[in-house]
Length: 377
Ligand code: GDD
Ligand code: MN
Image 1 (cartoon, rainbow, N blue to C red):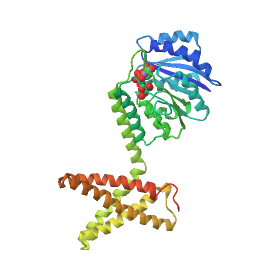
Image 2 (image 1 turned 45 degrees about the vertical axis):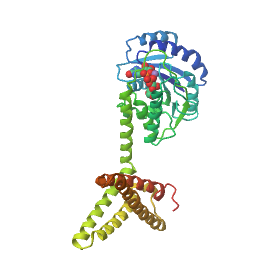
Image 3 (image 1 turned 90 degrees about the horizontal axis):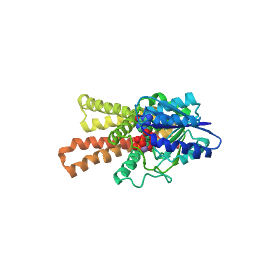
């Protein structure tokens, strides 16, 4: 296979001066069975990075350069990866900072993971011996660690330890599949977004731990505050969209319909049949729960549909019991607690919070117990 190391550069003249000979003379000879090359994705750096590269191109024939306007790190990678695949015959492309923060001696480990069948290999600073610079101030360390825990938690993908880093190797198929969707991610957010899409599409991911060293020459191009806002926004919106388009969205639609049924039966019972509101509401709730059960079974959780008649009735009973438990203990319990802790005035707010918790509780129980993957039917 041919692997191309892509080095995005913006004013990294001194850094590439050190890194490229190291790659050519020390690292590449250690990679067996694969052809190695370098592509510099330079955004017309005013410091003359490109001139330095052109000098190297005279000495080593496996180096190329792609220049373009400065639209951000993601845009430089998209341009670079497209170039490496179309013009250099790359089967595998690497993402690597040009400033020496990514230990190039790890390249053979990345290639080994590719040989073992991984589609995408992620360099990780947060597991298996990986690390961040010891001399970073505590708040910078904390931010770096917390940001990654945040992304892992919101995406509920704990097996990936480093979402934001930029030391990676991937097969060209991964890039070609995601390229079109990635064109909106021009800055550093490219990294999280690319990895998220690759996982969504079922590509195999492996990790290589490495020590992220401190920058020695030149300066970082990241704008920390803007980046933090972008990460939080992207991760939360993506997750909400995913949930609403997935089973959680269907569950909300089914529940909304159940709520309507409940309300209609309550009104009809009271106004046309002269029932007391309590009795009419109990009838409405019973019908709503029955409707929820069936629509969830044939639509929301249809991949784990309950089909045998015996299981159907047992699970229906469970469904009634868990629904009642949720209303009494979760929803009403929240209102009760709010009332005794903070006073009666906020009762509607406690109701809203309780209902939110109830929705989450029910959804969790349905997923884990009623329509669990290996049901005993
Ligand atoms: N062509 C191009 N265009 N290159 C860029 C641009 C750009 O707009 N912005 C940054 N780069 C290059 C830099 O020249 C460097 O080689 C590499 O991308 C990384 O940029 P740094 O400015 O050194 O980033 P950092 O060290 O602060 O950020 C690190 O953490 C991020 C978040 O975890 C890097 O490891 C990033 O890759 C990582 O995403
Ligand atoms: Mn850097």
